[in-house]
View (cartoon, rainbow, N blue to C red):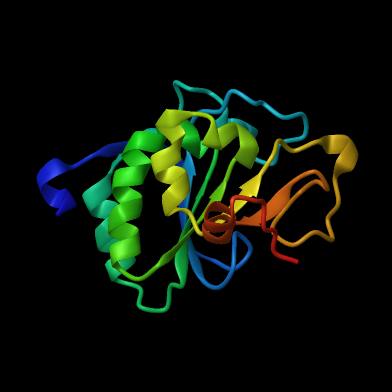
Length: 168
Protein backbone atom coordinates (compact mmCIF):
# COMPACT_ATOMS: atom_id res chain seq x y z
CA UNK A 1 0.00 0.00 0.00
CA UNK A 2 1.02 3.56 -0.66
CA UNK A 3 0.83 4.40 3.07
CA UNK A 4 4.23 2.75 3.58
CA UNK A 5 5.79 4.89 0.87
CA UNK A 6 3.97 8.16 1.21
CA UNK A 7 4.67 10.57 -1.60
CA UNK A 8 4.15 14.28 -1.70
CA UNK A 9 2.85 16.15 -4.70
CA UNK A 10 3.35 19.84 -5.48
CA UNK A 11 -0.19 21.11 -6.10
CA UNK A 12 -1.95 24.29 -7.10
CA UNK A 13 -5.30 22.95 -5.88
CA UNK A 14 -7.92 20.22 -5.81
CA UNK A 15 -11.56 20.17 -6.88
CA UNK A 16 -13.30 17.27 -5.15
CA UNK A 17 -16.23 17.10 -7.60
CA UNK A 18 -16.18 18.28 -11.20
CA UNK A 19 -18.15 17.44 -14.33
CA UNK A 20 -16.15 19.67 -16.70
CA UNK A 21 -12.72 18.04 -16.45
CA UNK A 22 -13.46 14.70 -18.10
CA UNK A 23 -16.19 12.09 -18.38
CA UNK A 24 -18.48 11.71 -15.36
CA UNK A 25 -18.02 12.98 -11.82
CA UNK A 26 -14.32 13.56 -11.23
CA UNK A 27 -11.84 14.42 -8.52
CA UNK A 28 -9.40 16.90 -10.08
CA UNK A 29 -5.80 17.39 -9.00
CA UNK A 30 -4.18 20.58 -10.33
CA UNK A 31 -0.42 20.15 -10.25
CA UNK A 32 1.93 23.07 -9.73
CA UNK A 33 4.58 23.93 -12.30
CA UNK A 34 4.46 24.27 -16.06
CA UNK A 35 7.14 25.11 -18.59
CA UNK A 36 4.72 25.57 -21.53
CA UNK A 37 3.27 28.87 -20.23
CA UNK A 38 0.67 29.00 -23.00
CA UNK A 39 -0.62 32.47 -23.88
CA UNK A 40 -4.20 32.70 -22.56
CA UNK A 41 -3.84 29.71 -20.20
CA UNK A 42 -6.81 29.41 -17.86
CA UNK A 43 -4.51 28.40 -14.98
CA UNK A 44 -1.52 30.79 -15.16
CA UNK A 45 -1.10 30.61 -11.37
CA UNK A 46 0.05 26.98 -11.83
CA UNK A 47 3.10 27.90 -13.95
CA UNK A 48 5.54 28.84 -11.17
CA UNK A 49 7.67 25.80 -10.33
CA UNK A 50 8.23 27.23 -6.84
CA UNK A 51 4.58 27.99 -6.13
CA UNK A 52 1.80 25.82 -4.77
CA UNK A 53 1.85 23.56 -1.72
CA UNK A 54 2.76 19.99 -0.85
CA UNK A 55 0.00 17.43 -0.35
CA UNK A 56 0.39 13.94 1.05
CA UNK A 57 -0.77 11.17 -1.30
CA UNK A 58 -2.37 9.31 1.61
CA UNK A 59 -4.67 12.29 2.25
CA UNK A 60 -5.69 12.30 -1.40
CA UNK A 61 -6.54 8.59 -1.32
CA UNK A 62 -8.57 9.07 1.87
CA UNK A 63 -10.55 11.85 0.18
CA UNK A 64 -11.19 9.62 -2.85
CA UNK A 65 -12.49 6.78 -0.67
CA UNK A 66 -15.10 9.12 0.86
CA UNK A 67 -16.95 9.66 -2.43
CA UNK A 68 -18.48 6.51 -3.95
CA UNK A 69 -20.05 8.55 -6.78
CA UNK A 70 -16.72 9.38 -8.46
CA UNK A 71 -16.12 7.92 -11.91
CA UNK A 72 -12.52 8.96 -12.02
CA UNK A 73 -9.65 11.29 -11.30
CA UNK A 74 -8.21 14.00 -13.52
CA UNK A 75 -4.62 15.25 -13.37
CA UNK A 76 -4.44 18.79 -14.70
CA UNK A 77 -2.11 21.65 -14.14
CA UNK A 78 0.29 23.06 -14.50
CA UNK A 79 1.92 20.18 -16.33
CA UNK A 80 1.27 16.83 -14.62
CA UNK A 81 4.09 15.04 -16.44
CA UNK A 82 6.65 17.21 -14.62
CA UNK A 83 5.73 15.08 -11.58
CA UNK A 84 5.24 11.87 -13.53
CA UNK A 85 7.04 9.49 -11.17
CA UNK A 86 5.04 10.50 -8.08
CA UNK A 87 1.80 10.74 -10.04
CA UNK A 88 2.36 7.24 -11.45
CA UNK A 89 2.54 5.86 -7.90
CA UNK A 90 -0.71 7.65 -7.05
CA UNK A 91 -2.31 6.58 -10.34
CA UNK A 92 -1.71 2.89 -9.58
CA UNK A 93 -3.66 3.27 -6.34
CA UNK A 94 -6.40 5.25 -8.09
CA UNK A 95 -6.77 2.51 -10.71
CA UNK A 96 -6.94 -0.13 -7.93
CA UNK A 97 -10.07 1.68 -6.68
CA UNK A 98 -11.71 1.05 -10.06
CA UNK A 99 -11.49 4.71 -11.06
CA UNK A 100 -10.41 5.88 -14.50
CA UNK A 101 -7.69 8.45 -15.11
CA UNK A 102 -7.77 11.49 -17.37
CA UNK A 103 -4.69 13.66 -17.84
CA UNK A 104 -4.37 17.12 -19.36
CA UNK A 105 -0.93 17.79 -20.82
CA UNK A 106 0.66 20.49 -22.91
CA UNK A 107 2.82 17.77 -24.42
CA UNK A 108 1.43 15.85 -27.38
CA UNK A 109 1.02 12.08 -27.19
CA UNK A 110 3.90 11.75 -29.63
CA UNK A 111 6.17 13.80 -27.35
CA UNK A 112 5.15 11.83 -24.26
CA UNK A 113 5.85 8.37 -25.68
CA UNK A 114 9.41 9.44 -26.53
CA UNK A 115 10.24 10.29 -22.91
CA UNK A 116 11.05 7.26 -20.77
CA UNK A 117 10.33 9.19 -17.56
CA UNK A 118 6.78 9.93 -18.71
CA UNK A 119 5.80 6.55 -20.12
CA UNK A 120 4.81 4.82 -16.86
CA UNK A 121 2.23 7.51 -16.11
CA UNK A 122 1.04 7.63 -19.71
CA UNK A 123 0.31 3.89 -19.80
CA UNK A 124 -1.89 4.23 -16.67
CA UNK A 125 -3.95 6.96 -18.36
CA UNK A 126 -7.35 6.25 -19.92
CA UNK A 127 -8.00 9.63 -21.56
CA UNK A 128 -5.33 12.15 -22.54
CA UNK A 129 -6.17 15.70 -23.55
CA UNK A 130 -2.93 16.63 -25.28
CA UNK A 131 -1.26 19.65 -26.80
CA UNK A 132 -0.54 23.19 -25.78
CA UNK A 133 -3.41 25.65 -25.58
CA UNK A 134 -3.22 27.99 -28.58
CA UNK A 135 -5.18 31.19 -28.03
CA UNK A 136 -5.66 31.76 -31.78
CA UNK A 137 -7.33 28.31 -32.01
CA UNK A 138 -9.57 28.80 -28.96
CA UNK A 139 -12.99 27.18 -29.35
CA UNK A 140 -15.41 27.14 -26.42
CA UNK A 141 -17.65 24.57 -28.14
CA UNK A 142 -15.07 21.78 -27.75
CA UNK A 143 -15.71 19.12 -25.13
CA UNK A 144 -13.05 19.15 -22.38
CA UNK A 145 -10.58 21.17 -24.51
CA UNK A 146 -9.76 24.81 -25.09
CA UNK A 147 -8.28 24.94 -28.59
CA UNK A 148 -8.82 23.00 -31.82
CA UNK A 149 -5.28 21.58 -31.90
CA UNK A 150 -5.86 19.69 -28.66
CA UNK A 151 -7.00 16.08 -28.91
CA UNK A 152 -9.11 13.83 -26.70
CA UNK A 153 -7.20 10.53 -26.96
CA UNK A 154 -8.23 7.04 -25.86
CA UNK A 155 -4.80 6.09 -24.54
CA UNK A 156 -5.42 2.39 -23.97
CA UNK A 157 -6.72 1.85 -27.52
CA UNK A 158 -3.94 4.02 -28.92
CA UNK A 159 -1.26 1.99 -27.17
CA UNK A 160 -2.78 -1.36 -28.16
CA UNK A 161 -3.31 -0.41 -31.81
CA UNK A 162 -0.10 1.64 -32.09
CA UNK A 163 -1.98 4.53 -33.71
CA UNK A 164 -3.80 7.55 -32.31
CA UNK A 165 -7.44 6.81 -31.46
CA UNK A 166 -9.43 9.93 -30.67
CA UNK A 167 -12.83 10.14 -29.00
CA UNK A 168 -15.35 11.74 -31.33
